[in-house]
Image (tube, rainbow, N blue to C red; front, side):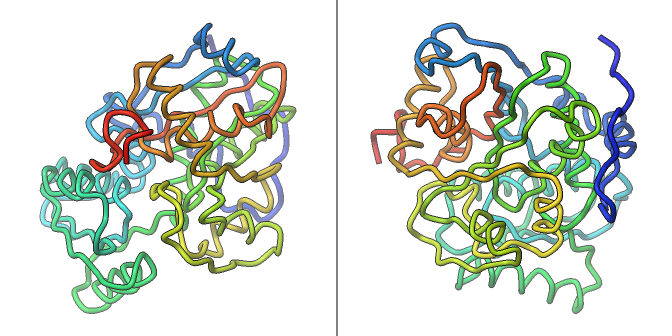
Length: 325
C-alpha cells in the first residue's frame, strides 16, 4: 500500500522532519524493518478492544532501538569511537551499529543494571563501564569521555535522527490504520516523538499517548509542569522506561506532539507481561508490556488502538513469567 503524502502541518519550531523519516527507512538494516504487526483475537477479547500490536523484539537486539541508532550513526566509519549512557537497550544498539562499521563503542551504564543487557552489549563488541550513582552519573561520564577523548557522543532523547529513525515504526503501522490512538512506552522520548511526528503529518486524527511507570514518572510530571522534573528511581522494575529527568529537547518535542501521558503500576505491567506471554508468545521485559498494561487498565480506550511491544531483554530475576521475581 503506497504511503500517502503528508497532509497536515507540523508545529512551528520542531526539530524533527518527516522527510528524514522517509530517508531513514533506506538506511536502517533489513533486520530491523517491517516487524510483525497484527491483531490477536484472544488478546482483543481479553482487552475488550481492537488492538494492533507491533512486535519489535524479533531482531538481533530484541528491541526497537536499532532503528533510530542505525540512522543516527549511519556515517560512522572504521576506527571511530562512539560513547553513550544507557540503561541497556540503547547501549546494545550503539554497540551493534559500531561493530557493523568496525568502530569502537563505550557504554556507560548504572552499576547493578540488568545483567542480560550488559552481556548483550559486550556480545556486540561494546565496552561497558559501570558507574555508581545511577543514569545521571552515567550521562555525566559519557560527556566527560567526549571532552577528554574526542569520542562521538550519542544521546537518546536528544539527537533528532534517533527519533526520526524510530518514526519508521509509525510509517509501517500506518499501513494497518487508521487508529484512534497509538500507545507508546516512554523513557527518554525518542520513540514517541518519532511516532508522533509521523502520525501528526500523515494521520492527524490519531492520538499519540505515552505510558510511564508510576514508580518513575519523570516524563509524566515534566509534561504537566512544562519543564524537566527529576524523580527518584529504584521504585519500579520497568527499567527500560525509568529515567531520572528528561532532556530538554525530548520534553520540548513531547509538549508539541504528544496528546497525553498516563501512568501504569508495576502490578499492572506484570499482569500485561503475563498476558503478552500467553497471547503473543513473547516473554517481554516490563517496558515492552507497558502499552498493553495501559489498555488493560482501561486508561486508554478507542475503537481501534495500536501499541508497540518494545523490548524483550528481561532481567533474569523476573523469570519466565512476570509473576516470578
